[in-house]
Length: 134
Image (cartoon, rainbow, N blue to C red; front, side, top):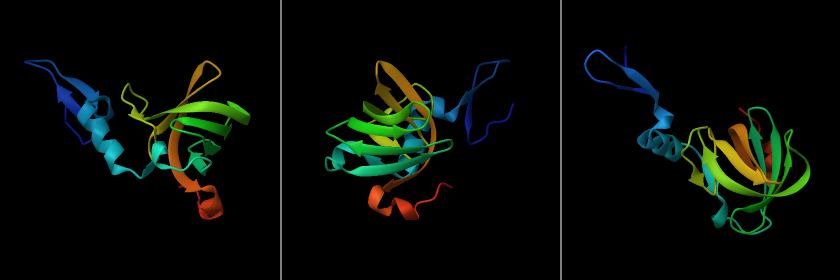
């Protein structure tokens, strides 16, 4: 089996297992560092963001820390208080309090954990009219 940039080959004599690069700590750290994004704790309360994912558009208003008000997608048809836990590649590694392009937002609301599709763009609401999903 060949080793490419998106996987790592592991195994001993006569065995090989391919592990997705995002499933390793080094791979996740590289992916998270490579993309654009925002750290919620660095934003002023009431900052309004428009986040486009592969499938949906979300309006996110920062409260304090990881607390947000979110509307959009299938799970949030109305403004809903929630907590943005962070962003991931869909694996067990999570960059806390972060919304990152290329990563999936992980949100806790109403006793559920929601994982979005990959983020395509992030914009402050006042500049969102010029932001287009890729």
